[in-house]
View 1: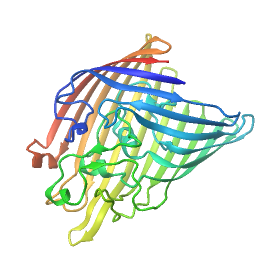
View 2 (view 1 turned 135 degrees about the horizontal axis):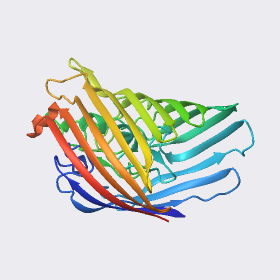
View 3 (view 1 turned 90 degrees about the vertical axis):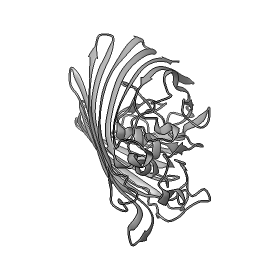
Length: 380
């Protein structure tokens, strides 16, 4: 059994957070000052044999609906080492292999507190109940990896991205909980629930994803990930949550130099929901985001800088329900390794975005926000 406790000291200006059902881009905003619980997590990782194990994560995060939630829970298989071809797999509740920022059994971010816009959304709306298989082949100094997965309980993926837009935060999707949505337009308030359940199954379809990674050396990794939840767009449950059709591609790259570790991801996709009418489908949204980050060992820790860009393109009903947006963020963080299992992390995050739908809520379409955090992390 292992775990982590993450306590935060937070100072933030700007809008009220999306966690409170508003349109703020950060986890912390108006009303979220002072000492907060970043996360408390316990990880159970039993080994049943040389090849079979399990991972069960229980977590608590300030801002979630339930005090304690199941984070992930799956069985994992890994073939014995020593062969040029390695096979692994898992089955249960887990995140697909998209993020280059999250690591470890508790799916935490090592160098910063806040992941990029891409991986903040991955944490919100791409967790699955599924099965996954990976084949890894080594040829000389190069390694090729092919991963394929099938899943259910991903039908609402795209809901937050449409009605709230991108955000930057370190909250993770609850297995049994839900996230609030901002106040919906008059058109959508009678059709869509005021919340979204990340692991809802509505239409009975099986979604799929695939990942191809190439590692030409120990210093370089490039991967391409594709995702399609195969939502039918028109199935709806008793709470007025819909099956969204969400598809995207993600390109990732990691380069480890002697002094600096570089990471970059770029994502493009679309999400659609509802019936077609004279004005088009109820919701038809294109989305794009990218970031690049650099980390360097400095003193007893590491310094990280990151630049993010994100946007959504509303392709229907813009006259009455315009959810298009674009924005940038800049982040600087220093992780001080006090002890091997104890860190203090300082982070400054600046987010600037333009979203025309804010005017409907009496806000200026362009908003800028600064969030300062200091975190004490104890691992055990």
